[in-house]
Length: 89
Image 1 (cartoon, helix red, strand yellow):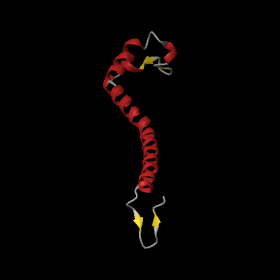
Image 2 (cartoon, rainbow, N blue to C red; image 1 turned 135 degrees about the vertical axis):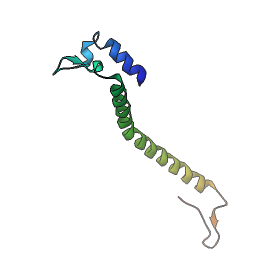
Image 3 (cartoon, rainbow, N blue to C red; image 1 turned 90 degrees about the vertical axis):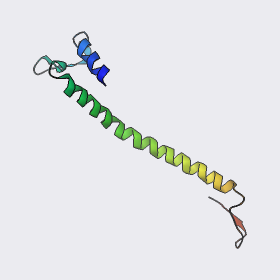
Image 4 (cartoon, rainbow, N blue to C red; image 1 turned 90 degrees about the horizontal axis):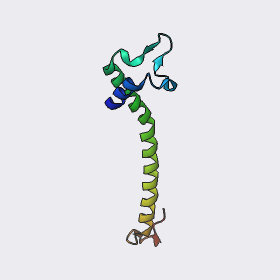
């Protein structure tokens, strides 16, 4: 995050295609305050990953449930004697 802030500050004039300048005031965004920029980049990173982490956790939970169902089915000790039935998931 901090390295990215300094990199953008150093190379913003050399790369106009990145649109790192404010079009209304023609002032480079990084001439204002690098600390505020670093904080903004940090919270932008957090906002991006708030959507990614729950999706990956949901996928992981579904895979775990699927594997647990196989393990429960394969366990011969989980058996209902009264109904004379093995476990089916």
